[in-house]
Image (tube, rainbow, N blue to C red; front, side, top):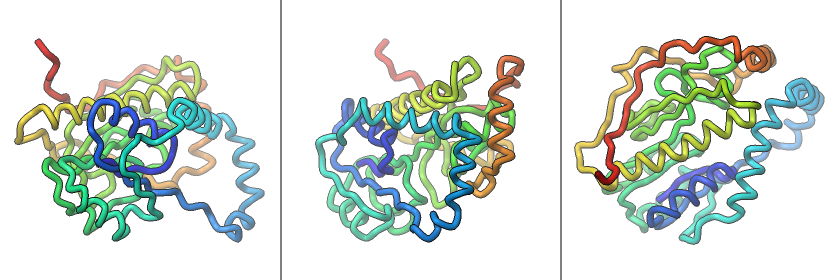
Length: 266
């Protein structure tokens, strides 16, 4: 079973999983739009921000448009659309399906009782960032560029818990985005890598035997949680400045990562 957001990159992931594995059902958490009053009070600020940092917004928008074009429909399976992933409707749907594995991506923080739903293997989550070094949002790749932490760009698959990107790690991998021709290409590299890593982790869990990899994040050096409110104009300006100078950057040594065993046929 898949629990995901309604963005095109989540729809793309769901389709890629469904192409390789039987998906009993998908719970789609629909994004809520801001109230008209809130939009009205900050309209000028938003317009000005999008003018100054157009290339940042355009890169993500183009990525979503490309995924929407490539994957116009959700996989053919039981679909449930909810306003909250933690709704009782979602819990009842999950209990009825009784999945072997729950695959999470792009939802709000999952809480009880859905967090404790009985799944044969467990509940896993994709973080498009390198835990525990870079966690939170709104976009960890952008944070890596803005902070000149190019060596921390990457993805994580973890067992889910009640924290923010804090579960025991199954696998992590870094990705060098400095060779990308544009911010769009950089985001596509990271997202495609995330989908591939998720598929590898699913294969590992379905073909392997317990005990599965589950590395506590306390075993790593301390990382940082980023929040949307921290993504200021100064940070966006730093991203653009650092992106222009990426060819001059010497990549720092990669941090510790967790690799999956090779399950390919010998």
